[in-house]
Image (cartoon, rainbow, N blue to C red; front, side, top):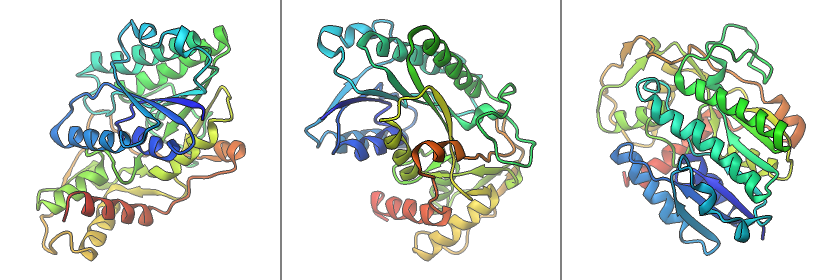
Length: 330
């Protein structure tokens, strides 16, 4: 089997992707196992434990911002033996990115640059990397954002680092002919997800009878994309080494945050996960760095892989709740 490197392999998307690809490829998984909070770190450990059960999975704990990365993957052993690097490691989150700007620079800019250097060093001609829908900033046009929409006005430092990664990828393509496939993900959700995401927070709050906070008074809109649609899209792109950027956005999955909360509340009641009497959600202004709306078109993706992220939001939330109930033994 061919070998693929997946960075951020203990993270949400990295883990789900590795589980999808493990039966078709040898996987070298890289992650620095950064400690964010107890719940997130516990999930990382559980994801990694599951992957270690596969004999063709190899784990490397490593900080990609380390300048000695080329020594960790010596050319005499790895050169011309890696099919593709899928770079999903990143410092995520928009609201505190400016406060912790050094962490975002180290992970999202220096770490990404090192990965591209590694690809050149090992003779790899294809890197698939995670960008973000946040590069579009606030959305004012009525039509969904396309890959050619303006990205000159990001609202968070996190978005700035993702925009920088796209420009760095262009430079490596120009200077080294490296095909860098950038994926602008739109609010990825699903089993094994990130506890800092709104849908996960809502379930945690409801299950624990805690106050739910709706930022932007619940009126902000997010385009959600189910995790299996994301990993399937990446799988289909592995054999298409193009230097190109794609939106990866769920079809007809845009929803106001207050409506997402209500959808989750109703489904959680159906599954007897919560009580019928809950605290009234607290409405607040948007946080710094948040955008008013995300909504993307995946037409370019469909043209090249004949696949469109189309899992219905209600179905995806059902799958997440089923996983949550089993994982946390409710």
